[in-house]
Structure formats: C-alpha cells, structure tokens
Length: 220
Image (cartoon, rainbow, N blue to C red; front, side, top):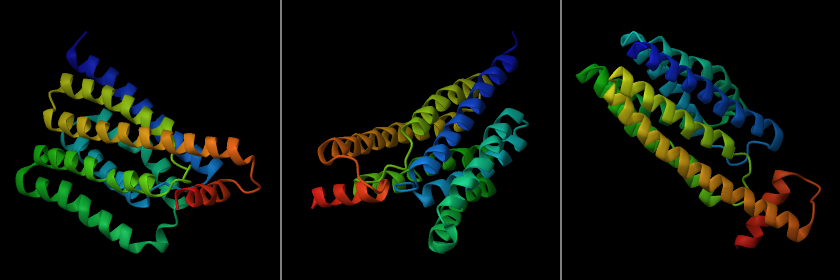
C-alpha cells in the first residue's frame, strides 16, 4: 500500500476521533451544564482550527483540512453556550495569542514555523482549562471522555504526520496530547469529588450549582 494511502487512512481515523471528542464535550455541556469549561481554551481551539485548515491548504493535505473543519461547527456550538459576548477580553486575548504564536511565524518564516508556533500554543491554550479545574471543585461540565478521545486522536495524527513527513505538525500534536491527558486526569478527579459528595450528603435539588456550592464549602 502506498505511503500516502496509509497516511490518509490514519488521518481519517484522527478526523473521526477528533469529531467524537468535540461532540463528547458538547453533549456533556448540554446534560450537566457549562461549569468548568474554559471559554478561552475553546475559543482558541476555533482559531487554531482555522490555522490548521490554512496549513492543510498550503500543504495540499485535505485530511488535515477535514480534521479541523469537521470539529468547527461543534466548537462554535460549545463556545456559544459559554456566552462569549460577555467576555470580550477573552476573545481579544485569544486572537492576539493565536495570531502571535501561529500567524506571525508563518509570515516571518513559513508554514513549518507556524506549525511549531501552534505547538507552543497548543500547550499554553490548555492552561486556562487546567487552572479552572484546579480552582473550582464543583465544576463538572468538563468531559473526561472528550479529552481522552482527544489524546487518542493525537496518536492517530502523530501516525499521519510520520507517514507524511510533516515533522513540525507532529511536534505540535505531541505537545497538545500531553495537555489533553492532564485535563482528563483533573476532570476525572473533580467528577469523583462530586460523586463522593453525593454519597455523603445525598441527592440535592439543584444539579451542578448545588453540588459546586457544597464542594466549595468543604474546601474552605
């Protein structure tokens, strides 16, 4: 089987997993609320997705384009739930950050530099989500499945980039995968805290808000 065909097959697995990962977060937000989901992290995902679509176009790689394009509508739906109009500072921060890390290196040094810059962005952009999970014990809106699927998706994309010899994009994906695993672990920890609280005090009349309040009191 030609190398390009193998790469495309692996990349299509990455497309499917990334779409499932994004949908898992949207589904949890609908069911449990948005508590704990970072607007800044998810808005930057949209901007970085636009970068990868541009990168895939420049590299004549339709699989890369599909990987971000498939997730984009769901990412927009997640961000819409987070009331972005109330946080213009987050939106401005996201635009400046992704522009500096991704777009500026492309203009100065080319697409490989932009991909490496996006790798840096893919680590830093997960920090707001990590910090939010650390600071707010009752936040149960973050989907563990989403971030674990995101890590699995990264493995598929790493395989794609190896076969396609796109080393800068590979480095960016490895960096993002590490952040995915940290967030999945933190979210799982928070969910277990909530479950332990329910066992301790019994079911509460409100969902995430009441559980969060109890956990906040326990942490004081």
